[in-house]
Every structure is written in C-alpha cells, then in structure tokens.
Image (cartoon, rainbow, N blue to C red; front, side):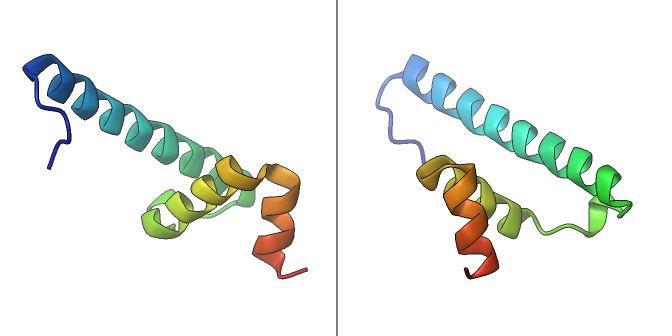
Length: 69
C-alpha cells in the first residue's frame, strides 16, 4: 500500500520500488555469474537482507555480521 496521498507521490513511490527491485536483481545476476551459479537459484529475500545490512552498516561491517565474526 503506497504511503503517498497524491497521484504523483504514488507514481514516484512505485517507480522507486521498481528501480530498487531491478537494482537488486541486477546485483544478484552479477554475483551469481562471478560465483558460477545459476542466478535463478539465489534467494531474493536473502539478497534484500544483505543489501539492507550493507546500506546500514557499510560493506566491511556487513561482511563481519554476515560471517558471524
């Protein structure tokens, strides 16, 4: 459900969600190809969590959290 109350705000919100989805899927594709894996076998939910963690803590700290160090 969009949070915006105006038509332009809803349109902007939808485009924002689509762009983020496309960016994450593109990142998943690149990572899968580098790792020699099938991109369709990667988890969208897990990828979103990694992106959120990286955006929040930065790449170095996110790697430590991901590995459990």
